[in-house]
Length: 118
Length: 114
Image (cartoon, rainbow over all chains, first blue to last red; front, side, top):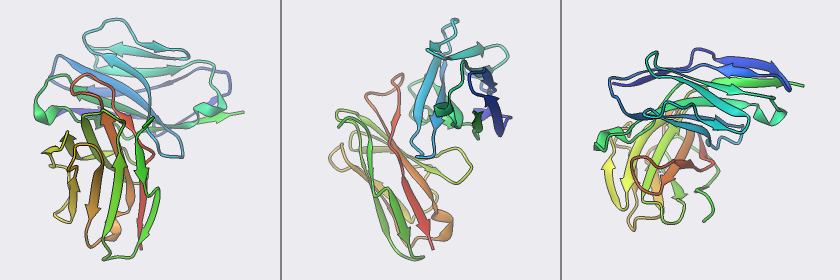
């Protein structure tokens, strides 16, 4: 079974600086998707960035980028120029790319609480 | 609609009471998911619908939990005889197709059982 591990329960960063959130996963599959979701206090899960495992190029969305290391099964999120609005829980998630009924659900890490210091 | 809508946003139930949580997915989205998220934890999968068919209910914690999506759009998660351990945020999510498309979440229904 696949697992997702986020080893940092909490991280803090000074506003305008860069922070990296860690995520590792375990799978025997060759094709899958990885996601970072942001969950502010409102509890709505907001997609930050997504990576397809077959793509070697790291995904980037404005100030958010990932470092995807497939062999190491690592998927870290880098937030540049941190802003107060980035403060939230961040969840890493995995999903199989295979169209088998049991493999469409997301498998989640435990989350990392990101604190932005003004 | 523009996004996934859930109601009620907050519900306080007395232990033993039945509750019903509603999810309006994004219009046209075929796939619908329910997740349960306890305080300080990541979401846990409950059940999955493709149109009106409930293809997986393996995550439902007990037979007190029941979900339906009779017309392939709105879904209701029903919890009978609520217990304190049912207190959590219940997240609904939808997706246009299956496989590679992005899943979009609603804001959740916060259930507190007292």
